[in-house]
Image (cartoon, rainbow, N blue to C red; front, side, top):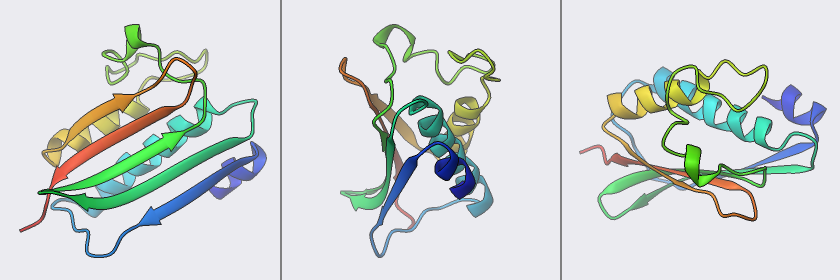
Length: 131
């Protein structure tokens, strides 16, 4: 991911708290995380981008929070971004966020998308804590 961020003048900030554990396949979780970061990179095209990745515990959930300062997601398409082959990018495959959704469901997660009108997007994905 570093090569992509260097090329596009994007900074990734990681904030991973201790004692966070998830139930599920670590390779699938990496797939989910890579696709969320790539989505943020694409959203920050043509600007100095900042992507923040946080993992922490909240109540009875482990939370993955990925934010970017990109173009944002309009309200009218928020419900479609996880559909396979749906993309707002001319050369996009529409598979990245559908993979995120599939992995999230496999891990019994829930997602919330926050994208204010002034831009930027926040994906909050909440997973049951490992017992």
